[in-house]
Amino acid sequence: MKLVPNILSVFRIFLVPVFLIAYFTDDHDIKIYAILVYALASLSDFLDGFLARKYQAASNLGKFLDPLGDKLMTVSVMVSITIDGLLPIWAVLITAVKEILMAIGGYVVAKVANVEIPASNLIGKVSTVVFFLVCVAVMIFNIPGNIVTIMISGAILLALLALASYIKTYITVMRNRDDRRPPPVAD
Image (cartoon, rainbow, N blue to C red):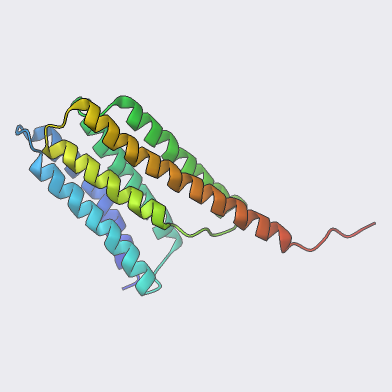
């Protein structure tokens, strides 16, 4: 059972090209096959986290694969929708910068500071769900551009709030880590 979360993360990574093929080969206005692949990827994301927590099957590989799969799918979906002219390019750029900052921060915390920060929080989970719903709505419905801008702005605001929450947690963890160090020895 310990390998199942990692297998699900790898599966989600393999779904990225499947999503892209489904999205760009479907001639219909509603990209139903792409939406189904995206939904399956989102379900696997929920399931791998649930199983890793329930069976205490978290691993260093999983801590790398899970966010990699999430970021690859999210960016692929957003870029695809943007190429179709349904999403403004600034939304992809802001999301990409946020994801890069989180990846760098995660690396620094894990490797350099040797500290573990919880992988998710409530704001991050809500942000993920809202992003999914916005992207699916954009793929299904012919939503006017100004409404799409409002919807994606709300999703990005939640994502930035999640980033701020992670930064706050990072600062707290780093301060506590520094407080546990013994004082320097005087010469």
